[in-house]
Each structure stands twice: as C-alpha cells, then as structure tokens.
Image (cartoon, rainbow, N blue to C red; front, side, top):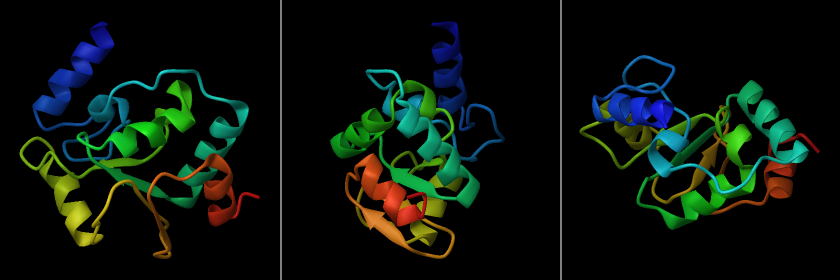
Length: 133
C-alpha cells in the first residue's frame, strides 16, 4: 500500500517511479496493477524487449493498454519500458516522446529500428516480432 501511495505521489508530482522526472516508469504507476502473476514466458519476453530497447506507448485511459498489461502480469510489468502519452501535465517529457514517435493509437510497441506493432499483441506475436522466437 505504501509503495503504491508513493508511486501515486511521484507520478502526480511529475516524476517517475525509479527514475528522474519524465523518465519511463513501470506501467502500474499509471495503468494500475495487473490482475495476475507473470508467466515464465512473459518474464522471458520482458527481459528480451528491455534488452532490445523496445518501448510500449499507452494511455491511462486506454482499456486495450490495460488488457495488454494483463497479458504480461504483475512481475513482468515492472521491467517493461512504458511511456504514458495522456498525462501531459504530470509527465510532459513522456507526452513529448509520444509526439516525437508519432504515436497515433494505443497500445503501440516500437523497436529502436522503427518497427512498430499497434493494438493489443499476444506474447507470441511480440516474441516473433522482436526476434525472440
């Protein structure tokens, strides 16, 4: 409870949990906490996506983003690089990053080489797209 309260205070102040103001934060700080634990597949995929520099762009108002987050589960979500696009006053640097990346729909996954996937993606689809499998 205390950690989620701290996360709420940090996000409201414009900071991100575990990083400087405006840095990408665990999605639970804006989307809420996933409903179940992470599978081994989700944890493995998260490590791979993070190592590749993949980013998940979403919005706290987006039901599809919450669905995407739930496919990963609680533990994996802490390591996914999530960029919140719909809190420009609280997270202006993240909102600017969304504009710079020309994000037009949520959720959107982007790799450093520019490849992207729009909409809710299964773990299998993200694994294939990112080259894990």
